[in-house]
Length: 429
Ligand code: GLC
Image 1 (cartoon, protein in one colour):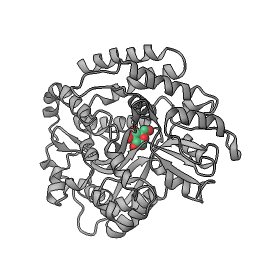
Image 2 (image 1 turned 90 degrees about the horizontal axis):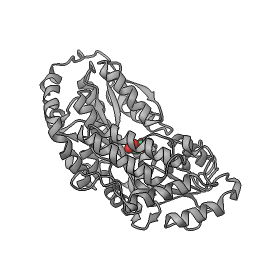
Image 3 (image 1 turned 30 degrees about the vertical axis):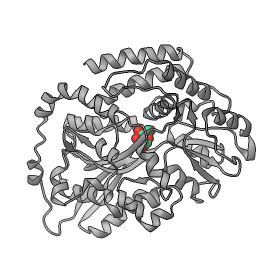
Image 4 (image 1 turned 180 degrees about the horizontal axis):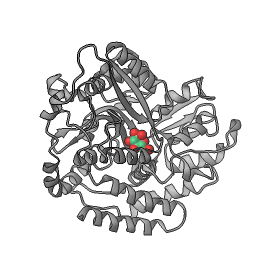
């Protein structure tokens, strides 16, 4: 699937060459940017989506302890990543300097780089001898565009199945087994549902869709960058997704569920099964927040006819092009994405390191999820979304057409056909 990504990159590279040159985010400019005088305290504003774990708080405290001259103010963005994205675009297109450092979803850096919203980081990376080979390649690639590194990988996500060990003895191996199990276990031990997922019209539904499509042998874009979504296998995957979303064992309002609504229902003990990202495990084990701590197991997502497929997600960190403190902002980026910062994010935030040497760290090895040898292999096999400045368009097309099919407003076949036509059109432009 890496080739898929490369294919799309190639497809858009030609039309972008001109506009990128015009952006001219000269790396030299950064060294001339304002620098704090010695002893002067600098305040950085760091924005990220809602963190339901102690991870961000601990990360900031550890950084401030090491950098007494830099104070971090954290800004919480919406839980729906699409809404966060749109707020950033509004801010940056107005050249706002109100935030300095921010988390970027793996699907944003190409777009933000092309728009000139973020600093290229190569100069800092070279100056501070950061070896990018120490990071998971897929995560590095997500922040790399047009030969430059625009964002540093913070953590990596992959879709997983979490289950209640006190209800489910063996996690389901196939989607059909999951359906049978969700029907059977709904109502057991005070649960209200059998399965939870993300089905709102937003980025999360794209990830769930990609997982179904690939599990049934479908693809969105092939190795050459051609749109190949219109196939019987894609239709099959979408049909399975519809069967689940329209079932009696998911909440009747599942089409309003992002990660927040689904993980809340899960930790309140309302379902034996949930599809979510790695942070779910740490959250569900936290007795201060969860009613099911000690009862949670984790497994790969169930397989369709073509095997199991997980979407590749994750977050990187970038520096606002209009930040007044890029040097200090880099110090914070470096800390968060270095060994110490990523260890805090893994242990307190439950999110998977992108910094490979950490997988040999004793505390990380003890973690049930990250200590499992299959975990990194699983991440490397996860299905990425395209790295492209037109990704928001592709995502919107998928979101709209999948949502119509989930709502029963059009057949899966029609949705898939519409996606093909609209994507081809978008890629031409
Ligand atoms: C997680 C993933 C991100 C994805 C999002 C969808 O935050 O890390 O890549 O886009 O979920 O909701």
